[in-house]
Image (tube, rainbow, N blue to C red; front, side):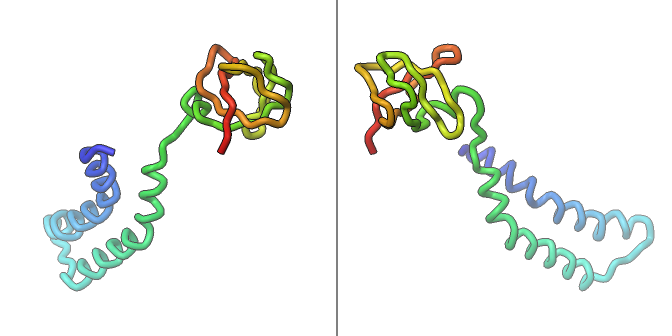
Length: 129
């Protein structure tokens, strides 16, 4: 991930601390409401602790690559349901797909891996772990 994207995500995480501190230290005093420094620092400490506790979980979600469409299928493993000679049916996860094997044949029960798509048909190859 690029440095700019990381910085953008980090600034998004810190925006609540920045907003609250601006409110407590600049906006409220400008309208005549003085907030004691101890209270401001206590609030800031609580917000920072919240980030320390929750950001590791949040960061994993932000880092996760969302896959839909073709990119979600390329590289996926499946099982042959109907012999591929060269066309047949495979199961990828819980879904059944028409498929064409790239080379040779594949028997029922053999493992395959998706290498490409052709319309709504998968192009697969035999796969051994």
